View 1 (spheres, rainbow, N blue to C red):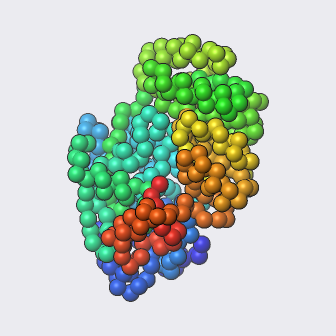
View 2 (cartoon, one colour):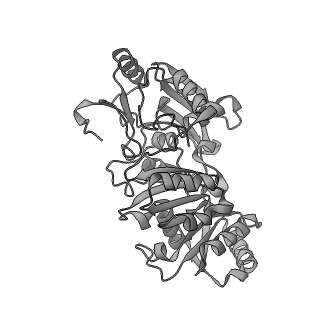
View 3 (tube, rainbow, N blue to C red):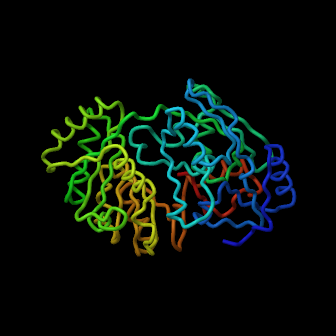
Length: 393
């Protein structure tokens, strides 16, 4: 990744973004699009100048009583989390920051989280980032300002475009303003911990918990080798199940779940701050911060997530009940992708050498190319980031 600091443009308005993108298209000058720049290493962008959205950092409108927030794309996640927490609310998709994992400076932004469709452990219950993405204002590679969706949760008209942009990593349009849904924060949370389960047994426990009437909002498994690493420093594998809500409800559901899963052994509990700290470690993949091996984000059906550890050598963290697997491995990229395709999933390389995104072929590649041509026919926006025929994830 080239140091393009001297060629970084930081517009303050959407109109300026339109002008910069239109000029870049006219001059055949590709742009790297960044927010806080924390995920610049995920995918190699082939550009000679940078368009930074750091100057678009204002909250436009926040209506706590309506559970809706509109902000410019460059607003940092940290500032938004503080803002909504003051109103007893939260960003329901629990976006990971990942700047320490990726060893980057800067602060992750709301636009960046939505463009990458990044979601934390609560996705298992609340849904992904794209499920809370209500509306947008963006600039296409043609230099056109477009709007979609709005402040109303049931405004179906704008959902498809929001979901298309979510996960496109800035290759289709430059987000300048977004509207998201927020939710009331839980009054209490408790995490049940089960110890010493192998990957298969842990998967069975998580599946049973998710199918129980307990409203589990986080399900993760850290095998022994991972649990033993800092910051957890555990002595055996840990399987964790999070419950959130009102205190009385959480306590009753925790007792019910512990009884339902007694076949997996006795459980211990983490309450309040200790529970929040544990899930922060899972969300930010802290056990792999200093792991030198390639780091993969694998999306597979939860029912077969545990098989990743059998199919590939390395260390794994199982999130979303096994549907998301972080894998640190020396295996060759082709071998990883072949194994994950066999399990019905796809792989993204977040750190290390090799193609970042899953290559596409056939009708899906052709459809993706047509969508790219419609939004960015001259290839101005983040060219090369998702590779030949790269698709949203």
